[in-house]
Image (tube, rainbow, N blue to C red):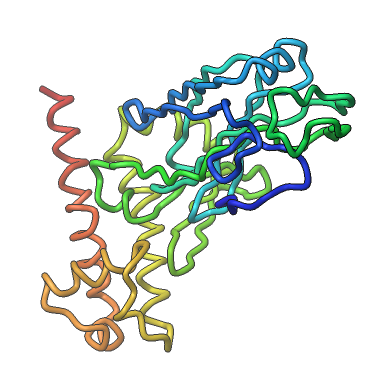
Length: 274
């Protein structure tokens, strides 16, 4: 979620406040191979640093998927984070929040380094209070596969028998049981053609069928997977009414979106025989 810039009833080191006149808190972030985030926090405030070293404060990174709303939180006492990301679960866009939070209740906090309005006052923090915060940043992944960029996510759900597909206007969500999810993670790169023909083909087919059966007007949709469908329908010269009158045309749209996955599968078989 995007954290709003606001004032707090206690001192916070941030760009929106002047509570620490000489302090500064920023970070550098790099997305490495679309597989993990490398984050380095840059803190210039000796008292806060002292309290981090004592375990009173902690560096915190919060990650939330814009599409799925799933959240992950990481806490540690050192300023460098290497966070592995599964883009299948997160989708192509996430919100990143980098903070310093109170790890426990703190009383009698020094005030000499603070704005003069705090001098002579008793300053304390409860566990979970903000100590320092940076503005929320939006991170976008770049997928080679256009359909993945447009919003298909794969996640684990131990409560399904094999796999299920849930569709909304932004995300096609594939839920695999635990055994299948482990297999997916193991083979998603080496057995890509097989996975396209089994899991993704079914998911995209379900999504397009939902559009065809719906009474909603999706022509103005700009985000998520729907623009990818309408673009490929246009390339094929199809209208939504064409698909409603002849459902077999949906197969052609799926093939166009996934770039003829059956051809890719048999090409793989032929390469293996050679």
